[in-house]
Image (tube, rainbow, N blue to C red; front, side):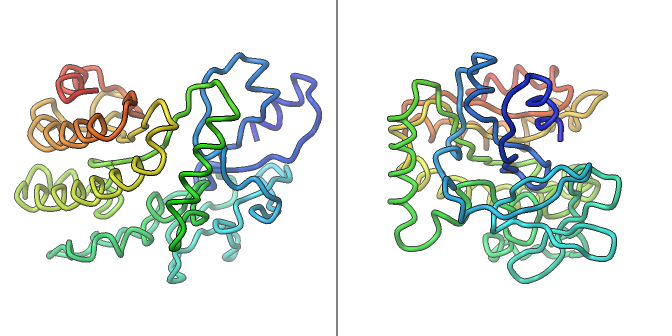
Length: 286
């Protein structure tokens, strides 16, 4: 909604608003805006979903018409908009008056024993791991790596901007996606062995996907973007001691592997007040 108003304020021609992130209602920034503000980066997903067949019509909460990825179009459920997993489960809701989706299903929220052997199969059942931005499912299937490689190579040939490759690799957030925020913070404090077991499995999944991902796009990108919102408005969600015990060695492992696989910089998207954690993040290789 803000992007549509920005274009109007700048006097730019009207163009379809393409929402690449349905959860947060984030728009693809068009070339004329990138030039207007001298933006020197571009995200890898901009090299995919370039055809009309990849988009479907939707309406933003303020009535603005937009386009959504065909594989992530919200549905109406009563007065709410919802996002569903491939199994049909409602995993996110946006009630009237909201401007983004909230997760409503947490696979491990009510379990005493965690099904870590099937963690990968459960990824589509949480909002943040189940709703894909471009390239999304365009790179699924037997020729997916070739599609990913070719798209990254074509984007590299088309721009001199630094290309950011969104990877994720979330750890604290991964626990919150599966257990819910309150439950996972309790797990870290009260059941550390269980938390370590979950995080070990998450790192194994991330590392395997990282090798596949950078094997396809590594030669064409400049920055690999990880994400983990360690902060709140008041400061970190966890103490520096807890960061160093649970997360620093695992981030170091992932970031060391990135540098073995590709000549890239590492960026961490990290919302909130995290200043007390910065020394530990730097030691981990950020």
